Length: 378
Image (cartoon, rainbow, N blue to C red; front, side, top):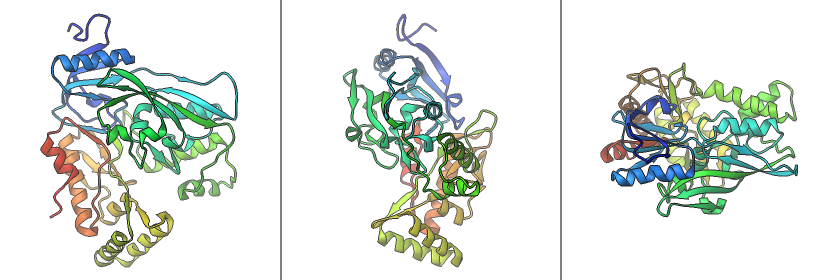
C-alpha cells in the first residue's frame, strides 16, 4: 500500500498481525503498524493516528503486554532505533547511553563484557530498554531506577523531546510516571545509566547466595554473576523463545501488605491449609519484612492453592514459577484472561489476597479491562 505517513517516512503496514511482535505470541492485527527508526518517524506515526482519528500504542519488545484477539484498532508504533555508547575516557563511574529500541539483555551483556557494574542482576529479562524504564524492571536486589541518570522522552502533546531526572520519573515497585500518572503522555527515546568500574556485588537474595555457596565462590566476578542470574532465571522463568510458545514474564505482581493485612492472611492460611503453609508464611515474613510492611510473593499464594500446571485452553500456569502464565502453543487472549481470572478468584477465595496483574492490556474493551483489573470477589 502507499505509505500513509508520507514519502520518505517510516514503513507503515495495514492489518499487521501483532502476535509475532510479542513474547506471549498472542494478539490480533493492528489497523496500522509503523516501524519507527527515529524520533521524527515516531512523530509521523502520531500524525497518522491524528489524521485518521485513531488511538496509538507503542509496542517495543512486547514482553509485558497482552493483546486482544481482535487486535488494536489504531496505530501501533514500533521503535526500531538502537544503539549503546560509552564515553571514550575511562573513569570509576561511567555514563552509558542507551537508545530505547535496544534489546535490554543485550545492554546488560554489553556492560558485563566491559566490566561495568550496576545492572548485572537484571540479566535475562526480555524486552526493549525503553520498556525496562517504563515498568522500572527489578530483580535480585537491583532496579533500573537505581542506576538511571536521566531519561529522554518524546512529549506527545507538544511533539518535543524532554530530558527527565530520576525524581521526575517517580519510580516505585514496577512503576514510573510512564505507566501511571503520565501514561500515554510520553514515548521513551533513550536513557543514560550511571555504572561503576568498582565491584558492587548484590548477592543477598537466597537463590543467588545459594548458587555461589554451592560452588564455593565468595567474591564472584561480574561475568559469573551474570551467568548465575541467567541460570537461576532459566530454571524458574521460561525465557520466551520462538520454539517454545511464549509468555509475558511475570503475570502477577507480588503483594506488599501491612501488619493488619498480614494477620488476616495468616488467619486464612491457618484455616484453609495444612500447618506447614503457615510456617512457610512466617518464614516469608522474616525474610521480606521492611518496617511495618511485608512483601508476600504471589507465587507462594498461587502455589499453596495448588494451581501450578492449571490450564485453560492452551494457556497454563507455569509449573516451576507460577507467577508466569504460559502459551503452550496456539493460546488465545481469551484463554489467558480466563486462566488469570480463575487464578485470582481461587487465591482470593482461599487466602483473601487480591492479586494484581502486570502486563498491559491492549485492544480490550473497557468492560473487559475492568473485569480483569477489578475482578468480582463475591
